[in-house]
Image (cartoon, rainbow, N blue to C red; front, side, top):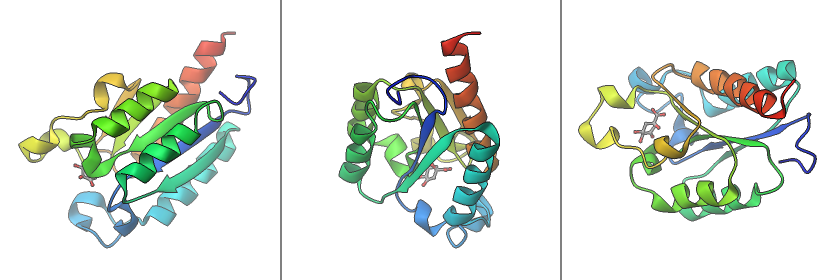
Length: 156
Ligand code: DQA
């Protein structure tokens, strides 16, 4: 929450390992947009929705955990693409549970259409929603979804 649980809401967008290489990394799977392009698109979308966003990427699990912890009581919702940590990190799952904020999980690729080890996510069952396979647009849909979730929580 932002302290008042009232708008303007603040949304934290977190990206995990190797997503700093977007635009150069396996572009057939992840697309041509860079992370900076995605951040700009998210900032434009956030402005149109009247919310504030923080955008963060790290290749380090502990740093991601610390960024999530720092969101406690400061942020109203989290959009996260944990990248490879999706499939391995109980620490990121526990951090998300600890801060008790609505979470939207995003993947650029459809992880269910890929290798079996990508089918399991440590995050999906604690997320409000999961968006996978819709490329960079997934972040924008997640922003819409988190705002709709917050609006519904506040009520008419
Ligand atoms: C990813 C899917 C993960 O399996 C992979 O490790 C990534 C990116 C995606 O956005 O499609 O790094 O989270």
